[in-house]
Length: 98
Image (cartoon, rainbow, N blue to C red; front, side, top):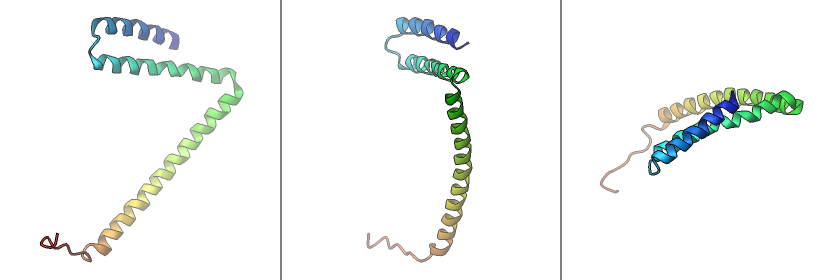
């Protein structure tokens, strides 16, 4: 499937590049299609056991980091609201002195 996708990418890129050489949007489409070539690396996980273990560890770590990011965002949001409530009327800005 990945090889067929890569072949389609090569054929499409040759057709688009020959038709529109100055169009930059065509280049972005080609770049997006070439990103699928990176999936070939994940085929190695079937044969390399250590690489498979590494990918599983990275997936678990990303899941844990996602949970931590949500908790961190909630703390920042709560303390931002607390700071706005405590210090909202403490600072007076006079437009004449600026």
